[in-house]
Amino acid sequence: GQDQLPAEELEALFYQYDRDSDGEIDKDELAEALFRAGYRIERERFDDLFVKFDTDGGGTIDLAEFRGFVARTDLRPARSVKFAMDLFKSYDVDTSGS
Image (cartoon, rainbow, N blue to C red; front, side):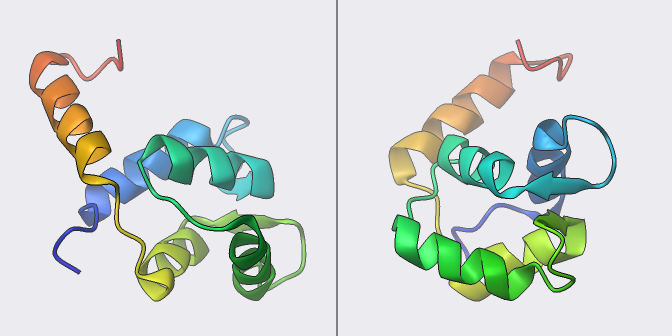
């Protein structure tokens, strides 16, 4: 959808939460990443979808699975959060995140 984050922002969000840089994030990291990006989803639906997208059953999802998760669920960030992120990015000129 038009309100979804662009692919490069999804990728940046994914790697921000891939704390050990192994190319995968676990369920808690995914939940935090989605929440921080302004996505809201019921826990039960989130749990069901995570199992569906964790195709190898390893308890983690990779970037491709993450993109699929966001695209398939048709999640959209809350407008106020998207506005705040855009505003932050306009001041975060060195992309340091602070």
